Image (cartoon, rainbow, N blue to C red; front, side, top):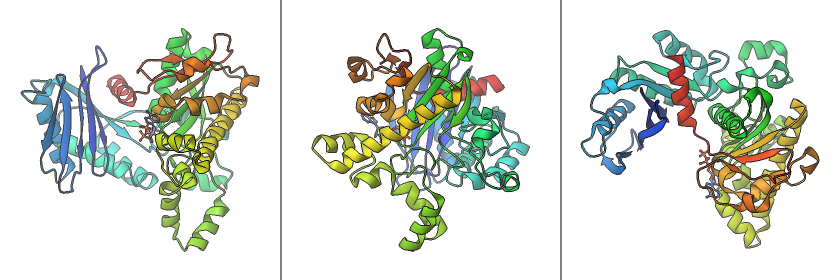
Length: 398
Ligand code: ADP
């Protein structure tokens, strides 16, 4: 069976067509500037690339163009739409309404719209637009919603609750949900396979370090804690997000800067993190270049990022009562040896020992073991593959 994975944003739509027998990507691409003049689709298939510069006033037109590209004479990989067995849609927030991957029905869409949009106003409405567009264009094809939050549904209450009035938690659903679940799930199960162990035998800390970053404690194959919270703003500082901050400091900042509630949250999401600390960039390549030239604030941003990540590794080892493996993944986790070294330095007391040469090695897209042979805790770099998890979950729920 072939599964189309769709990740729709407010003005973008990324896709991959995956053959589930081989788990190979047959075609992929992305529509940009949907609803904005100058829309385009960059599509790959058959080992070739093609650029479609075509007006896409809405997501329905975008998905029609994607299907056209999948059938294209040059880059097409299918002959008929019937070859697409299902569509898996990436969804960000589920609230407490969807604990696992869910097949799309009109009732499910109603709950999604009525209950989850306010939990992720930037992401869920846009992704739902993508679902509706696919439903219109491919009415007979089954569709599944795969949530970033599902893998974290196994967290115990003591881990996901905030110290607020319990009745308010019940009434408003204010609690930690966590994000990047498909990535944490993928890399933790790949780590178990690589180590030749059952997931049930391992205590793993997975560090998804990208523009958005989160860290999870995976005990026996199940997530027991994670660093992001009610929204993706929580946890360690990120590219432009502040990460955890005292709620009273937020109110103080808003007052001093004359910002509304909404504006101060936008400020914490967009103007802070390593970009705010360094005053240079949110991109770690720029920060590393800056630090090498002696820029103290770039160095400080890198130090803070590694220090905060390290604290999560330590606290999650404590939460799980042990640690067998640390996994680094995503843009920074896969490509930045200095960050990995900074995280692992000082964790020798837990049995973490890096192999400097292995850590300095280039990302070649494969799983790399970067701990020393005699390290009690294995340290792995594992390229993430969120699309494959979405496709697997979709196939499973069918
Ligand atoms: P997201 O999916 O959250 O947008 P990614 O996982 O793609 O983010 O990570 C993006 C970040 O990864 C960039 O901001 C950059 O800092 C870092 N990154 C990507 N490639 C490299 C590289 N080759 N070297 C260092 N950092 C990199």
